[in-house]
Length: 128
Image (cartoon, rainbow, N blue to C red; front, side):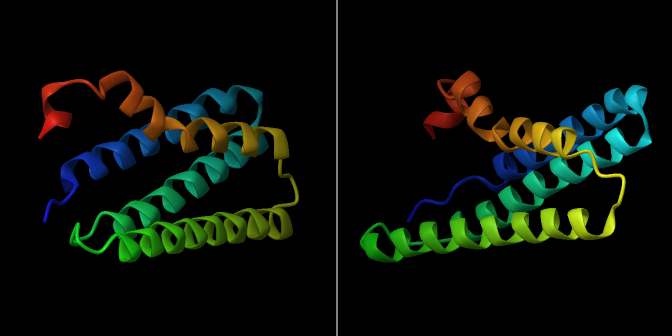
């Protein structure tokens, strides 16, 4: 049995949080509504990816590929539902929502884990 190192999950989530806050600060130059909308988008991506990682990277046995496949699908469905609920809440309750800012920050923050793997995927830590 091999587990994904939890410190890598936390590094990724930390990077997503920092990126969300940085985009929030940059968007603050365009106005409070843009900053809040961007932070909501980044928060949705971060929370969704955190739930996905926590569900997916628990302990499992390589002899049970069906269970792993079920975990992947289940984690993806939970991630999508949580992100949709955050978006729906923002659309319903935040009247000044800037949808382009929210979705722009969401897509960048959501793709951060893949970018981190692409950039650092061949280092010694990933070959454990």
